[in-house]
Length: 373
Image (cartoon, rainbow, N blue to C red):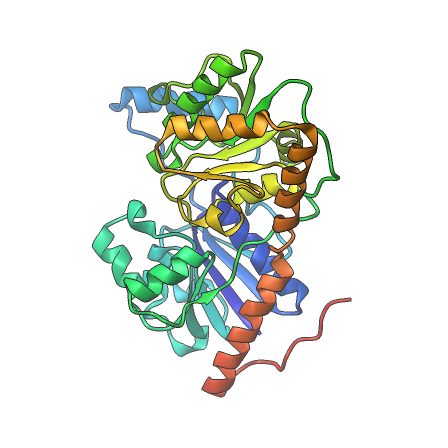
């Protein structure tokens, strides 16, 4: 098959990375894959917005020389587009064009037949990302629909009347995140991903860390993220924060943690939690959607109420207070569950669905592909 992946502005988000990884899994399956993305630089704040401008300059100075997005390289063919909208003339003719964000689904709606079947890979309920009416309208558009988590599949059926959305879970990049069984750190250590969006739940996580430190005065807390810490989230002064760490540093951060927390109010999937699980971390997550697919409550970690810092702190303290044998069992369970999520298996689901749809349409540029050696 010839497949066009249609993406919005490239960044360091889990969604951008996940799109690249499943596209590359389709390349490994023998398909011809293009990733078209908006390559315009993010606009700078206006000088009149003085505080935002200062934060922007500070951020650019601190991240100088670091990776700025997940599409700087790929086994798929990258098509950077220096416009705010990707148009049909920007991409080659194909069997399928896959939108990966609500705006990109709008873009491809009127594309000609030469660009292939229209498909939509839904990574989140993206009402936070634009005009809710326009976002919801994309979920009601006809065409193939794929989702990355069970809660999204249920949502598409119950709210938008699509009973045929196909579950294509995220996977784990085993070349980057895959650890041997390990013991706990020398001092209690908790890790988290920091995001500036309010739905990432940073304030709840930071309050939970303070509560945990009351019981574990030698607590070490580590976090990483793609943007500097914001004062409004009230981060602890003793938090070890890594701004845009190198990709080879991230698994080492996971492996230093005795417990990884996911404090979000909503998550399409929550890639860092799964990556941490692949590094033998028990996970404490809110019941925010995606993580419920890979956290088995009481087995590989704990699920807690959204926005409840006290409940989160109690759950983390249960992990930190376990005997070595009990912690090892939870650590191994978390790792074992992570092995259920595999990019090549997910690509096979995507491949089979697309081939069946193309067979029903009576068009495809090639038969079932021969796997690469």
